Image (spheres, rainbow, N blue to C red):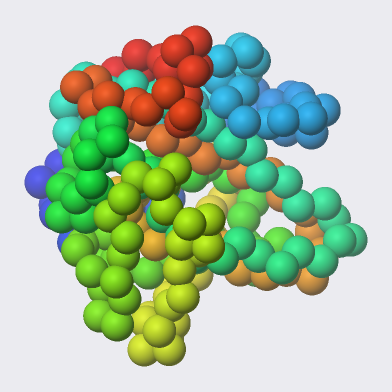
Length: 231
């Protein structure tokens, strides 16, 4: 799909993909899954694990970001999430990733492009282990029936991270499967989560958050050594 159409779809729906990672990144997925499983705290592995940095820096991801938004982004957060086979999982409640706008400034839910997120299926994400879940268009302003707190994450009550979704919007949530070695790009304010699973299969996913280089990243969100020039 040409860049203007992709950008239009992303800005309207909040998410595009899945897209395949490059061959070099796919070769690193199984070792990365094993390395992530061995970590007590799998947050920001890009800052200390070369395999994680290799995958998140894949040209398929960085090239798409540059294609749609240009250069000048920093990576400030990665997280790895695992579900073990045979163990039911309750899923992840709907939330958004836009923890800040610019330092301590109020979050602008109408701004597009300064805050981007990625989800990567290191192995398959599907109905057997809990699909990715999102509410199309929910990155814009205040969705009907909701009042979103515009304070930065550290200034909000913890329960606000997982807001109540009105029944009218619950019915609009969409499930998305990601093949192993694929990723989706979405605006960080998009409401998203994951479906519960009965433990038929396990999975490991990687998520990442980017901000434009002119954004001030609050010290309580990332330490200096965890912030990486991205593209």
